[in-house]
Image 1: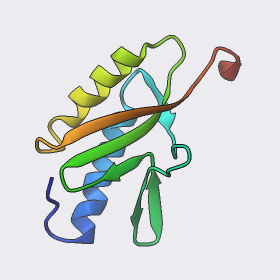
Image 2: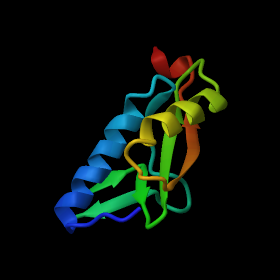
Image 3: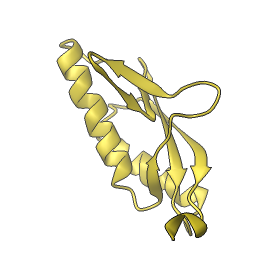
Amino acid sequence: MSVSGGAPALDAKVDSIAAAVLACPAVAGLHEGGTWAVATYLPRRRVVGVRVEDRRVLVSVVLAYGSSVRSLEAQVRSALAPLVEGARVDVHVADVRTATDLT
């Protein structure tokens, strides 16, 4: 996936990807990942949970309580398909929101 036009184009692309992922019902939030941080570093800020590479987009998420990993993966891939221009989408479930977290 090539982002032409420099940093402003990358800012918009990353923000669109993050918004699309967060709109998925099975996603409770974005997550920084574990040992290897998943983030995009932009001028004066970083977007946690999204890494855009040349031919791959990696998202690290928190699974919503009651949702399945398969459902989450399908939702994220479907939401990102129009945004990633054929790039591979890798979904990393870094955490799970439990019933206790909702109280």
